[in-house]
Image (spheres, rainbow, N blue to C red):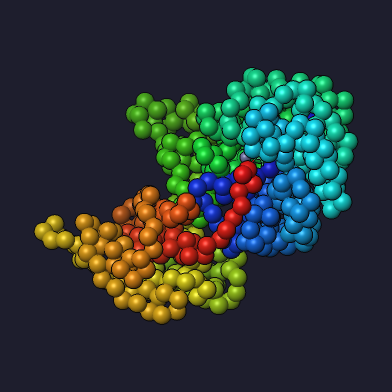
Length: 515
Ligand code: KIV
Ligand code: ZN
C-alpha cells in the first residue's frame, strides 16, 4: 500500500471506544445521527462499533454502512472467525469497509487474560488477519496493550500479520501507560526493525489515564512516523477516555509549522459535532476543555480582553469561528414555517426517519417557539433528541407533570407517563423537586436503580434557555445515561429520568471487546 507521507488519517472511534465509557451507550438512531455528523466533519474512517458485541451494535454498523458514502466504515472484531464474519456481514453495504481485528500481545494480558502462550497468540493473529482479508483488502491489526509488550515479540507478530495482508498496524496504548518520548521511540524502533513495515500504515491509539493521550499520539506521529490517529470526539472512551479528536486536529493545524501534515477534517464542524455527542451521550464537556469547552475562547482578564481587542493574535492562537463556534445564532422563531424548519434540519445534517417524525418534531418546535421567542441551533438539536427518545416503541414515555415547591413545605409532584402503553398517574414528595418527581415515578416503576449523577446545563445563554439534564443510573452493574431538555428543568429532569429508565429496560446485553 502506498502511504502518503504528508497526510494524517483521522480514524474516529467515538461510536466504538467512545461508547465504552460507562453510561455512554447509544441507540441505533443516535449512532446514525453521530455518523452523519462525522461524515460532515470529514473524518477518514468511522469505527461504527463492534459487530459481535450485541445485535444492536450489529444493526447500527449495518445501517451506518448503508448511509455513509465518503468515509470508510469500520467494525472492531476480536481475532476469531466468528467475530470477523460478523463484522464482515455488518459492513456488507459499505462503499468502503475496514475490519479491525485485535489481540493482546503483552505478557500480562497473554498470560492472565487470554491464558495463551506467545506462540498461540502469534498463530491466532496471523489466522485472524488472513481470514479478515477474505472479506476486504482493508484490514487493521492492533496489538492490544502494545505499549507494554516485548519488542522482539511485537516485531515477530507484526511482521507476520503484515505478510498476511494487514494494511494498518495500530500500536495500542490500551491502559494509558505510555509517555510521549518512549512511546514515539518504541514505534520508530518497530518500524525500523520490521522488514516489511513500509507495507502498512502505522497508527496510534492512546488512552488518557495519565492525561497524555494526545501527547502520546502526537509523539507517535512525529517520532514514530505514524500516519493514522485513532481518536474520539470530546475524548470519550474507556475509563479516563481516549485521545480527543478536536485536540489532535487543531494541534496539527495550528502548529503546521512543526507538524507539516495535511488533515482532511472540516474544522468548522468540530463544535457542532462535540455538542451533538455530548447531548446524545449525556457527557457534558468541561468548560475549560481545549477547543470545545465553553471557556476555550473566553478572555476574562482585562489585560487579555484589551489585547484581543487591539490584535486578536495577542492571546488567540485559533479563531473560535474556525472550529465552529457560531455564538448562539438565532435561526428560527415563532413565525417560521414548516419549510424553514425542515431546511434548518437539513443544514444541521439531521435526517428524520420518516415524514411523521418530521411532523412531530415540527409540532414540538412550534410549542417551544410559543414559550421561547428565539430558537437556536442547540434548541433544535435538543428537540430532535427529545423527539427520538419519545418514540412509541419506548417502554416509558413522559406525558406531563405538575410540581409544587416552596421554601416552607416539602416539594410534591404528580407525574403522568405511559408504561408499556398504559398511562399512569403517580404522586410523590421529596427533599427537593427532582427528588419528588423521581419518587413519584418510582412509586409505579420500582426500578431499584441508583442515581449516580445528576447534572443540568443551560443549552444556550440567557435565563430563557432550555435546561438539559443528564441522569446516570446504575443497576446490577449496568450504567446508563438519560438526557432530557425543557424550558423547565424539573420537566427536563423527569424526561431524563424516563430516558434512563428506557435504557435500563432495553436490557441490551453487550459484550465488551476487552474482556
Ligand atoms: O484500547 C485498545 O487497546 C483498544 C483496541 C481494541 C484497539 O481499544
Ligand atoms: Zn481503546
